Image (cartoon, rainbow, N blue to C red; front, side):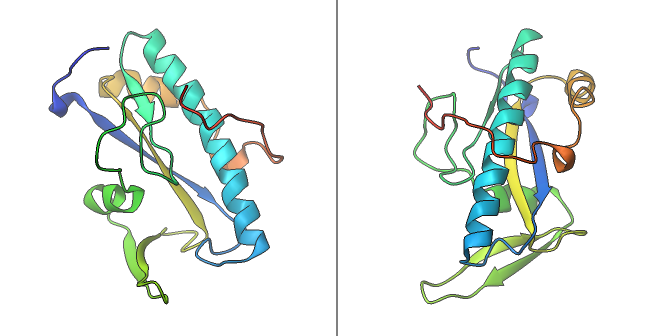
Length: 153
């Protein structure tokens, strides 16, 4: 798809619950992050395919880098936390660490045990909602790791 009017761009924030707070540096937290990333990639690629089959543009950002997976990489990464902060009435916390820390989302139900990730589309709201309704909840998705390629090639 070519250029589009920015007012036609819709952000799709996704959240998956985790078994531990993902700000922890533990083997369990790292395993959860890897699993949630695999689940998101599977969902996001299917979401993108369905949107594009309807004639609209869609992409998603790699939650680790903030850069688009299928589109050209710009100079500034997208922050899932900042995007959610601008759009959702959730709580946000600053986590202090030796390296300075970061802002994190505190999900209303899962607090810091959640994995946020974002997709984008130019599909109008009625098409977007119709396509979203075709998916089961990511909460129930993929209990085991799913092999995915994180390369944008």
